[in-house]
Image (cartoon, rainbow, N blue to C red; front, side, top):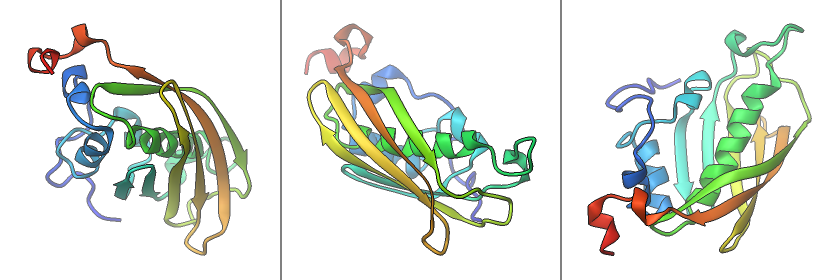
Length: 173
C-alpha cells in the first residue's frame, strides 16, 4: 500500500468558505490530490489511489485486523464508511459552486465477509440521479478477483450553502 501521508495536509475539516467556493468535482479531486485535508473519518480506512469523475468515485483500501469485530471478521462499519463516502462523494462531484449535500438514508447489503487476508478492496460509487433537491447513488465493494463483497444505495439532500456562511469573496458572485 502506498504511503498515504506523503505531501498531504493530513486529516481535517475544510472550511465552509472553501467548500462553497469550489465546484464539487474540484473539491473532491483536491482532497484526493492532497491539496485539501482528508476527512478525519477516513483515518480508520486509509483509502488510496482514489479517483473522481463527475458522478463516479473510486477508493481503494485494505481491511486489517484493526477493523475486526468480536466474532473475528471485518466489522460492517468498515464497509459502511467506504460505501457511504463513495456514494456521497459521487453526488458531491456533480454539484455546482455554492451547493452542498447530506446523506438522508442509506441501505447496505453485506454479501461476503472480509478478513485481514482479503487484500485490497475497491469501492466504486456512482450517482443514479441528481436533482435540485435530492440525489440518489449506489456503491459496490469488490475484492481483487472482482467478487462483490457489499453494496449500498443512498438518498441525499441537495441544498444551497447559505450565503452568510460564505467568505466575502463569494457573496458578490
